[in-house]
Image 1 (spheres, rainbow, N blue to C red):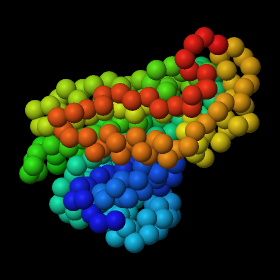
Image 2 (cartoon, helix red, strand yellow):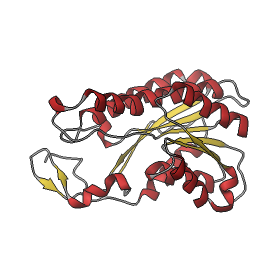
Image 3 (cartoon, rainbow, N blue to C red):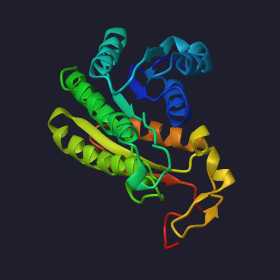
Image 4 (cartoon, helix red, strand yellow):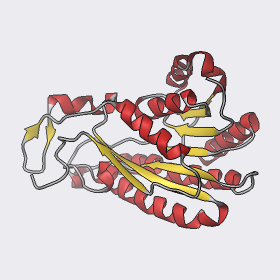
Length: 252
């Protein structure tokens, strides 16, 4: 497919939701910079794009590192000339242990990647979007079902995903004057390596272990493309996409 002239950055773009979203954006005609800590998965994602791989820029990036984030956005702008969409997707969870036993280092790792990394990327995206012609762009944050409700023993991941909601709202408000739209996609049990454990059963609040359903991650990718393609006078502020039978709505 030929280019549509639009440019996106996807963090955590080498695997899972990020990879599927990046490939869907490429298929839609976007030029996409895929960022992640490991080079090999990023190169594999580019290879999966086939001939359209010429529109994929691989940029190994640790979003905890402010200089690395600045380099990611500078390389993207240098290569493609503008930035229309940022998908803040990079994230991870801490080991599942009681809150009082969580190591400080594990807490800090999750906060630095999930929250601070998203903030640093948002800053750099705004700097480009507000100064380009035409001015503006869209930022999409990966929130998670955990932005609404915790799983047992998940304080670091849950706290950061609740904080992403605040980042989304502030970015939506502060970006208005620059024609920057910001929305959040909250995902529940998309089928990725991260959710493979659902099939073997995961702890529930009542102390039981229960197998949870998952759904095709390509539906998430399609949702990201839908949000990305909206005109900038229209915004999906929050979208929840989830396995219909997962234990989220209700009491349990």
